View: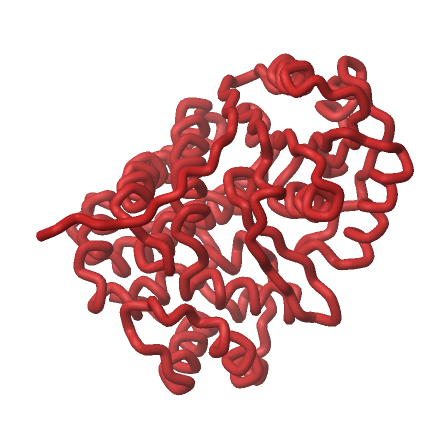
Length: 354
């Protein structure tokens, strides 16, 4: 077989160290020669935010963080960055905080230093998203890829147990969806595979002991690899579904990903043998890829249905109409309206997958 592919590796600096977030953020600011910082941070990260602000040249702060980045919030924050002539953005928090920083970077070309507090992975991608009139729009732009990531596993200690697990399963979704995404290639498949090898045991250990810092480090490492693979491969069927559900029905981001990924895997795996084998091997319990993901979700007590997350069953036909035009032609299995409705009904009900 002849090997042929076109791969892009996105350049970032990654500073990884437990209990080193403040020192490494200061190092990142100094390394970029930044003089005027716009600090965007989730409200629960105030202590870290204050510590960083004491040691960096912060000119303005934003703490109003809303999931799915409403356009009104984005517009205000972009205006604030311009008003204070910021020359960089430091963002602390999960995907919503980082997502807001990305819109600022998209519109002002400012560099981002991201300090994640979840396993969401947004910090390692060049994908932005914004919600307006109950519709989430996403795009790809290298300007929104953070220049520096500061990883500190101790920051995840504040995550509630279920949210930590759902956030980790969101990372699993990055890796799995990347296997059949539009730009999937051998390099990002290798990174996704290694990411899953860290994520599955990391999530199990984290569920067994939420204070296990080694498990948090392993899960964070796996989440980074999965996100890098996703950034290279692009958004597959799973992410198109979750973006539509999140933007239109205000579904919780991480939890929605944790429910949907098993059903998309069951749908695609019979048509993607290499991906199915990689996923099953990483899970390591002898089950098929989809059944293994389903069992892991049960084991770590993750949400099991879209119904329990608040989606109304009668919304499914509308959701299908929104998702269907966005389904990538590269999906290994043809996606019809009937098939997509069946997938969403199964995810809504929390059906077991094999």
